[in-house]
Length: 254
Image (cartoon, rainbow, N blue to C red; front, side, top):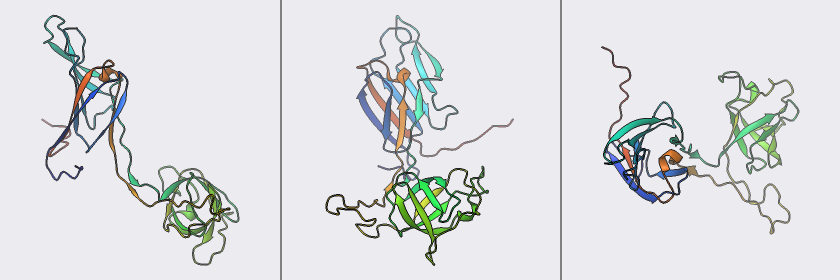
């Protein structure tokens, strides 16, 4: 089952026993509505919370619309409340290409230009494209001269490398470039060059392990807070719904 539902309504159910604490649930598709039914919490006790409902796209992610038992004698009269804390929080993963890019944390104005990045196993002579820099961003990030260009790299250590011209092989001199501010991304254009590049010694003890080029799908996750999860041992069933059509009608004018 996937989120490629092609206009068809999709549903799924998940029974579980609560541990009485907040928990993050992963769904098979992106739900538009999720209902948590506490099968234990229908007892004739006032203020029990047998049903909690979440809708995708709410103004505040932590909201939970809940049934509240208000008749302690009959356990059949309910009120509704909009819970503003300890309710639901969307926890979707971003997805995308998992191991072909890194974020930039620093760029020197020097000869050669050196880039510091989030930990990633680059290899000398790989080619990267630099993006998300320059003055055209919502907040200027500096190093306009590097933005959207391709460079060959020379690995210095696990979090930095210098730049060379991809054609001539000359070191890039960034001494006169616009000072780096923040942000930026390194997008890897070439993959594994050689199994032992950069040189690892002794090779048979710690061989180079290349990054794998793979697509990381979006995971649709929802965290249910303590006000939803009830007490330890409560039995639940989750109902997840994907609407066949979802239209935002906006403000209706009279």
